[in-house]
Image (tube, rainbow, N blue to C red):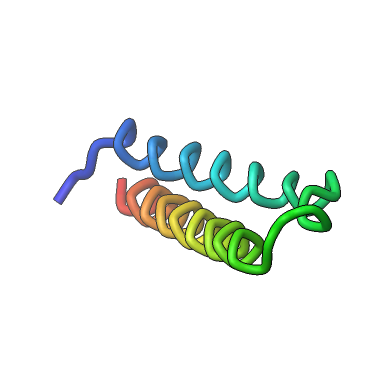
Length: 67
């Protein structure tokens, strides 16, 4: 089945931006002023963003290889 590459790019870009914003949160030092719950939720944001990024990238590479 052929998938829409635009749909996969949505996953790739969206996952990257989500994870990058979470990483910038920790790099900027915001975590020192926040609660443990907020830091945990940003950590989960990084993990989920990375998972979506790698899922989209893997599906995109599989789709390109099948052509």
